[in-house]
Image 1 (cartoon, rainbow, N blue to C red):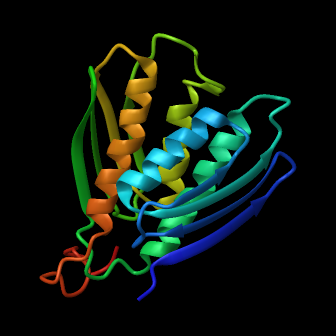
Image 2 (image 1 turned 120 degrees about the horizontal axis):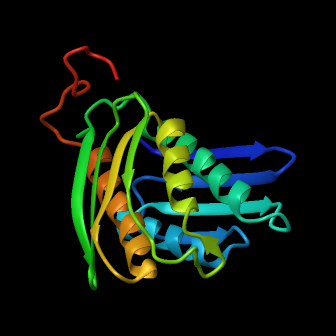
Length: 195
C-alpha cells in the first residue's frame, strides 16, 4: 500500500502544492520563499522519514502569514489523505526532544477530532524571515486540516531557533510513531470501530 498524497490549493493569496509520502527516507524539496520555514519543513521531513515536496507561491510582499498558514492547511490535508482509513496504525505518537538547551514535548492522536494545545514562548519576533508567532498558526492549521489532536509544549530553552526547530522535529517524530503500522492492530485502534 502506497501511503502518499498530492494536494493543491489555490487562493487569491497563495498557490500551494504538497506531495507527501509517509513511508519515505526523509527526502525534501521545499520552495516556500521563506528560508527559515523551508529549514523547519526540512527538519520535519528528515526526522519523520517522510518524503516531502512543497511549492508555495504566496503574497510575501504582505508578510509570511498566508504562506505559512496555508502550507499548514495543505500539509494537514495531505497527512489525512495519506494516512487513509487508519487501519493497523498506532494512532498515538509522542516524543520529548532535546536540541541543545531547548526541550520540547509533542504528543498527538490521529483521532479525527482536531484540537491544538500549544505552549511555547519566544524571546524574539522572528527567526530569519519567519515570524515566531507563525509557529502556532502553522500547527493549528495542520491539526485542523488533518483531524489531529496535537499538543506541543516547549518545556524550556533560550535560543528561539533551537526551540522552534525542536518543535518541528518533535512533531515529526511523534507523527512517524502515530502513522507506523502495528501488526497487532487488526482494524482501527478505537472502541468505536472507526476514526
